[in-house]
Structure formats: structure tokens, C-alpha cells
Length: 357
Image (cartoon, rainbow, N blue to C red; front, side, top):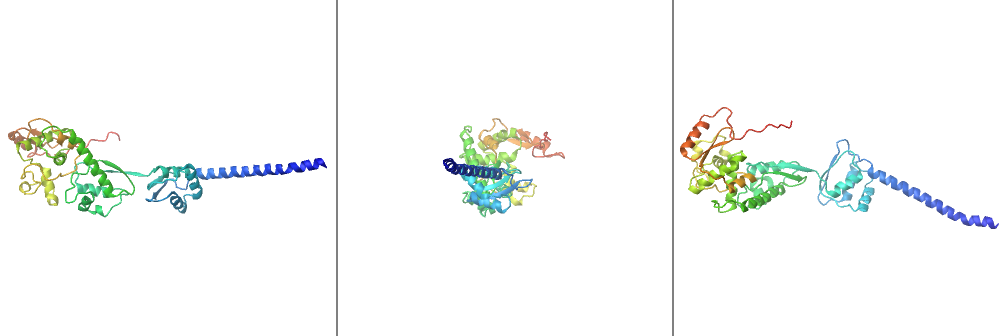
């Protein structure tokens, strides 16, 4: 009798141990199922999936959106995982989930802000209007009302009644989906101001500029006059010496800029006599504003001109120029290179072949 009572007393512990073991098995199975759900590839297809997270969006909203698109099955589980990892932060932008991505990858990408970035290049020698058109044509750029035309874009950048010409730095810019046209232009504008100030601080002595803005104007003339990097400082030297001697600059690109839409590609003697603020055959000194976007090298050349005695230059037809110290020598060069132009004459250097292909 006493033996049966002892056995009966032991049975509740056996039941508890069995129940505990069962609970542990259930918990282990649940954890395994949760882990499997988190590492199971998402339904993004062989090409991956692009999706957008709007500004102000939350992780829970993004997960629900992906659930509705049939990409994700357990948004609450994924959200719980993100809270456990302390990675509920999310960044706006366009994301690409490659094929084979899982829920853990998704949380990491959203938390890092691993958004798709695009490239856009603004070219030396373009005008402000051309730069604006290029920016607004950029992939996934938001076209703002302010950027609808050059005048309103200039006002948005802070040019109230002043010309924005020359103030956009030509370079390749990296941006996110959703960036506005004005945001990208403002970035390029700030960069130009910084670079101009940097180069101004290391300029040569005794330059005929009253401000860094005049150097920017000169740099734009140099940018339009040559595509040969080795010639920039030499052309700057010609222009500086002409200014110092009180000679007119007589630079065709400035005349063409002043003609605007009137110019049809053929610069005539009548054009050179036409009175515009940019006709450097008529006006003294620099034109009132830059005529194009100058790069850093053109700015550096304007502030560090090459010493010499040349006062004239003329295109040779291969993209380079002949420099002359006297008018007689210049006239001979004009007869040789301009009045007897060969069939393959060009004003800019030939493009180098790509040897990598």
C-alpha cells in the first residue's frame, strides 16, 4: 500500500517533465519555422524587385505594401524580428531587392537606406539652360514647378534678377530617386561656389580682376575657346594680356552667346559688328556674365595664366590653336588655317578611340 502511494506521488513530476518537454519541442519547432520564414527567398522574380518607400513612411507600412504585392507572407513576424534587432528605422527612396533576397535582407536594406542611386553628368561648356534640361531629363528626377524654366529655376536658387549663367559646376552627380531638379542644381551651384573660392585663394598676383566673379566670366570664355587641356592657360594668358593692354578680347563664343536664338551656326561679319553686351569685338573688357559652365581646369587657368607675349590665336582645324605675338603673324596664320580650310577641319579635338573594347 505504501509503495503504491509513493509511486502516485512521483507521477505529477513525470507529467510536468513531459509537458515541459512538449513545450520545448513546440517552441523549438516555432523558432525553426520563424527562422525558416525569415530566410525563405521572397517572391521577387528572377530580375529582382524595385519598390519605392515614400518620405515619412514606416517599416510596418512598407511591409504591408509588400504583402499586398504578394512578395512577403508574414509582415508581423518580420516586424517583430526588426524590433528584436533594433532595426526598425527606414529611409525613403527606391530599392532593388535582388533575386534570392529574404526578409532579413529586406530589413537590413531598409535600415541602411541602401537605395538605388542614379548618375547624371553636366558637361563643361554647356549653358545654364542646357544644364537645367539635362537635370529635368534625369531618371527618377522629380520635376518641380520651380524648375519649369530657366528664369524660375534661377529664382529658386536665389538669383533674384541676376544671371545664373556659369554658376553650375559641370560634373557627374549621384542622386536618389525622388530628388528634385532644384535640389540637384543647388548641389551643383554650391559646389561651384566652393571650387571658385578654393581656386581664388591660390591665384597669381597682379590679375586684372576686381572679384572672383570676373574670374568665373573669364573661365567660361576659356572653356568655350578650347577643348585642349594644354591650351587653357595659354589662352588665359592671351586674354589677360589683352585686358592689361586695353585691347578688346574679340572672342567669337561670347558673340555667339549674345546672339542667342538668332545664331544659326554661321558667324558673319555683320554679327561681329552687331551691338550686344556680349560682342567682345565692340565692348571693352569682359562680357557682363559668364557664357557657359566652366570646369575647374578652366577656372584654374583663368587665375594662373601662362606667361608669354602672344596676343592672338586662331584655330588650326585639328582642335588646337596657333598663337601669335604680332598682328602680322596672326594674319598669316588666319590665311593658312582659316581661309584655306581643309575638308576635315574641326574646332574641337578628335575623340580618342576606346581601346578597352
